[in-house]
Image (tube, rainbow, N blue to C red; front, side, top):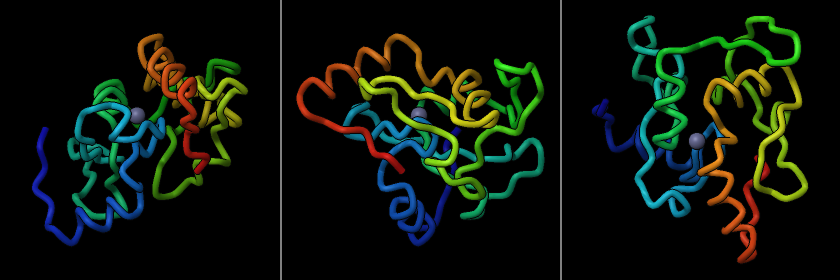
Length: 141
Ligand SMILES: [Zn+2]
């Protein structure tokens, strides 16, 4: 879904998310596709089109997220709020594995978000491996 954003809001988002997906940190350059604008709380659940409820997301994360705001922690089966890019700090919830190709959840929110958004699907892991092999390092925060 395309969302009209003022130029000012778009620039603020670009600066905040540094042209990478606020969830999986894949950069726009690495996907070859423009980032989408994600409503962190979906519009269908009352989420507004304001900076505090918007982030850049790669097409894949945005599509897997859909209208979800919670997901199950694979470790405990508890229902947990998904990572909120404006309220949570990325590095508190996620870390790259030693190869730099897969994300590891540090918290229930991190684990649940990785599963819900399919952030380690084989296609993107293969892409990350190729980028890492040519010296790219994923952003840490
Ligand atoms: Zn993503």
